[in-house]
Length: 389
Image (cartoon, rainbow, N blue to C red; front, top):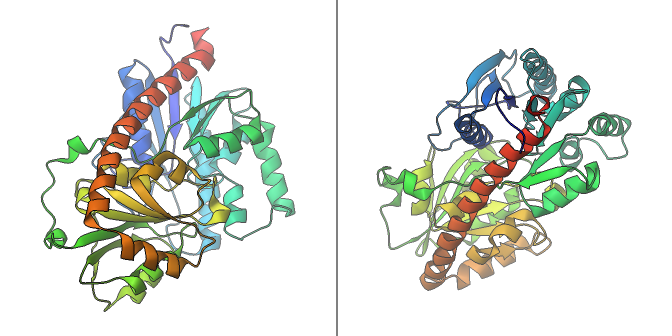
């Protein structure tokens, strides 16, 4: 293997610890691993406000924050701000003359700026979300739209040297798009070691242990099914279940309003990572048009907390492919309300115990995959870094 002495790696992502957010935590964990292997790691991020939760991952590497000019909710202004942030992040990264740049996908179109500004430079795409595909999935433009085609052409004009994907389905999609010859690593998002969270106090909302606890904790964005969560609320038997909601994102306020006053439902400001284990069944969903475009981390985190999940989505998606032994599937093409009612009616505490056992075994597998993925990424960096030759 080539020598890696003096290799400089930049990691680009909109959020980074201590700011909340699972993508920033993922970046920090990889940064810590690469620093531990002797690489010089710079983080280029944005000095902004963030919603979300997560664990207590420490910041690693040399952190540089770009100032943003907008943190409001206007979609037009947010897009302009994101474009400015993405350009500024890649431009700032260039000033360090890194050997390899790892470009994540927040803000939107960060990969486009990487394709434009990193020509003749080695870069790695870490595909948390896919752009411009997400614009089409959200119904903002069609794939035949001239702007969509232009962005896609730009993205393909300077292909990454390595791809980090969230699962086998997304990995296959990206290989179809960029070419089978590009090296890749599969790294599921949301993998953590539950043993590291044992210090978290017992939460007040989990005191009624005779009940089965359901939970939706995190972003309720356009990729997720509001219908599914409303159906669960409608079908909820408060004599058997408690539903814990910790919401943010586009649909969070709407679901909170819908849940208000419903028996068996409790709203909380946040659920800490170490508290996830007190939820028996986590709820997750992904609309069909978003398959491969993103892979929600909720199901992965639920399994790593040794809990179970109900996933409303396609069986041919990474969430189900990676974790199906530990949860229940509600296909999005079904009558969602009827299917939710059927699943909730037949679930027993013994079923939960059995699936939690499978989740514990899957959590071990996921931790091994994460360690192997970090090693693969490190070796990929060493392989493509110009200074290693």
